[in-house]
Length: 245
Ligand SMILES: NC(=O)c1ccc[n+]([C@@H]2O[C@H](COP(=O)([O-])OP(=O)(O)OC[C@H]3O[C@@H](n4cnc5c(N)ncnc54)[C@H](OP(=O)(O)O)[C@@H]3O)[C@@H](O)[C@H]2O)c1
Image 1 (cartoon, rainbow, N blue to C red):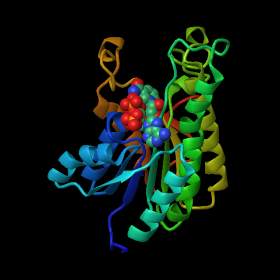
Image 2: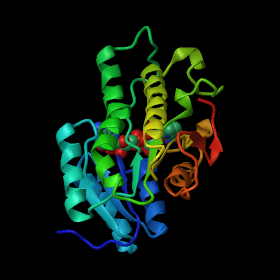
Image 3: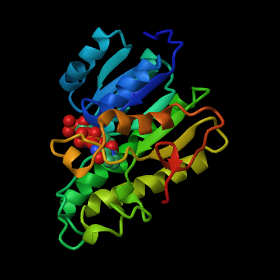
């Protein structure tokens, strides 16, 4: 049954932990109604519990971005329940072996990374676009990485002997997808941006590598999800600052 929701409605993918979960918390704390999605519904429900206890309007849903059926099912459920979507945060990501280079990469592993990081965001955006078009203030945030940038001198495409190959290539492709959707939607109210959270401590030992707290990485993403109507589109940002492609 269609709910009357006056607040902004957001969907975050891959949100049972890490940056995605914190993005859900921060968006909900601004008053948004947030759909917390994860591959496993059980994980989504468990992650949503403490947020619901804190009074945040969070809805747990299953979403595997690598599956057409799963994405279509959620789009249909959002249509029936809410009738529109205002914010889509494509956060879900897969990683391969960090020592992987272009020459030693197992192409099946590469395809799996692309299936989530590029096609997952693409598939989800296509499915949610009719719902985003029902919004007067649509926002699409593709959570990207300096690893996919030519200009990032620490983790970018031309650094570290070419390691983390498929991940970097997938994020460069996601940046290109961002530019294409933004160009296509330029005459609509929907703003589309790629946002890097920066090196963020979502796994044990990452602080020692200089990673910042999850709340800071998530805030970088939330900036793109809460842009004003005259905000930028088709850009690549971290902490509200433009990054080189
Ligand atoms: N942490 C950093 O330093 C950093 C830096 C730059 C960019 N980023 C980007 O920030 C985003 C979040 O990163 P993170 O560090 O929070 O990563 P993370 O902890 O590994 O979280 C990634 C999430 O994506 C989900 N996921 C993977 N495949 C999926 C699929 N097919 N369908 C739906 N969900 C799927 C995972 O779910 P499961 O639990 O089911 O596996 C997990 O919840 C990613 O896009 C990442 O590339 C992170």
